[in-house]
Image (cartoon, rainbow, N blue to C red):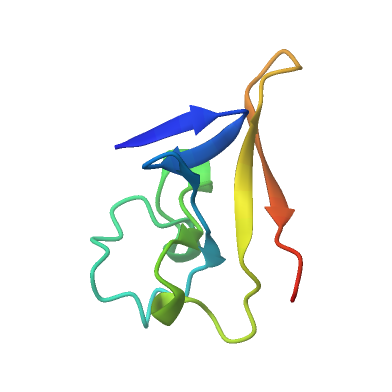
Length: 83
């Protein structure tokens, strides 16, 4: 189960790495709210995956930080440092 720690989406106490999804490669996703296929709430569905093998070519890993500072909750990408 995911949780929010210091504003980041985490699992097992560690930040979760996300990638830009390639729906054609993502065989485990049901794609019921896939934004890349025009599904979801108001056309703004999911565009991310945690499965690196299902990411689009050249996608860089990032963390998602939950920002509650404004009138609405937003999700901000924070790209990982490259080694």
